[in-house]
Length: 434
Ligand code: GUN
Ligand code: ZN
Image 1 (cartoon, helix red, strand yellow):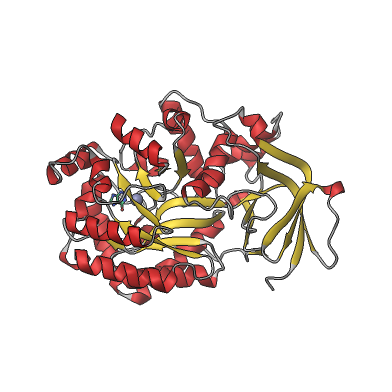
Image 2 (image 1 turned 90 degrees about the horizontal axis):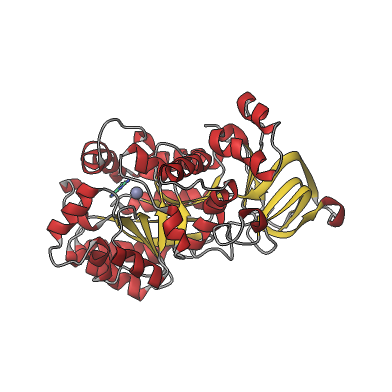
C-alpha cells in the first residue's frame, strides 16, 4: 500500500520563505492549475499540471479548485482534555483544579485512555491536523494509548507523560524518581518507532518540585534528540505563584533554565507575559514558543506578542491547546491568532497565519525537513481545502481578487466542512465518523 503512486490535481500552495521575514505575497509558490505526485509516502513532485508527467500506474485524484497544501500541525494540545473542552467560568489555576485534574485522573484506566485517544485523533484529522505535540497525563498508560492510536493511523505524532509531583491531587502525583524512570521507559519504548517521537513533559513549574525538574533536565541531557514541552508565563496569577515557589529564580524561565530545561528543542506553550531577559534567553537558544490563541482568550490569559517576537527572530508555532483552547480546528485557531493580532495592533496576513499552522509549527518541532510544507522530499501529510465550503464563505470567496483574499474567508470562518480531504503518509484518510 505504502508504495502506491498517486497524482493529485488542484491548486497547490507551497512556502518558499518565512512570510514574517519577507513580503508575504512573495513567500509562496502557488499553481492555480497544479499537480502533486506522491510516491511511497513522500511528495515527489509539485508543479503546474501541464508540466508534471503522470507516473505510470499512478492513481489520479481530481480536486478541481480546492487547495492542496501541507497538513496542519498543532504544536501544543492536551488530548486527555478532549471530553472537557468548553468548561465554563474559570481562570487557569481554578480551571485546572475544577475541571482538568478530575478529568485527567480518569486516564489511570487504559480503556478510557484508548477511547479518548481515538476520539481525539478522529477530531484532529477531520479538522485537517496531521501532526500534534500532545501532553498526556501522569499515567504511562495514557502515553501508550496515544502512541498506539497514532501508530495505527500512520501519523507523525509527539507526546510524553505529563510529570507532576506537587500541587496536584494525590492520584495525579508522581515523584522525581518515578517521573524520571517512567519517562525513560516510555521514551525507550516509543521514541523513533515509525513516525512517533517521545517528548519529555514537565507540566509546568508550579506542579514540579526542583528535584523533579532536575531529574527531567538530566533525562533530557541523556536524550538530547528528544523535544521537551512545558508551559511558560500564561497568566499573571500563575507567574506570581512561580515567584513564591521559586524565590531565588530570576524569572519564570529561570525555573526551567536552572534545571537544564531550556534549549532549542524546548517547546514553551503560551509565553505571553515575558520579561526582557526571558525573551533574550529564548531567542539566544532558539527555543520554540507556541501561540495558543483560543486558549489565551478562553481562559483569559492575555495577548501573545506575535509581531514583536517574530521580528526578533524567535521561532513560533501555533496550537489549539484544547481543552483550554476552545476548538480542535487550526482554521479557528488561525482566526483567533488574527483577532489577537488585531487587539495587539498588527493584522497578521493570511499567508502568515497558514505559515504558522504548518511551517512555523514544524520549525518548533524541529521537523521542517519532514513535514509542514508541500515540497518534494517531504512526507505526504496533506490537507485539501475547499475555499467555498459554506454559503457565507462561498459568497465572500466569489469576490476575491487574489490568493490571499481567496484564503482569508476560510481562515476566518472555516471549520471541518472546509476540509475536503486529508492525506496521511501518502494515503487518503477515510472521512471520519465523528
Ligand atoms: N498550565 C499547566 N497545565 C495547563 C493546561 O493543562 N492547560 C493550560 N492552558 N495551561 C496549563
Ligand atoms: Zn497546555
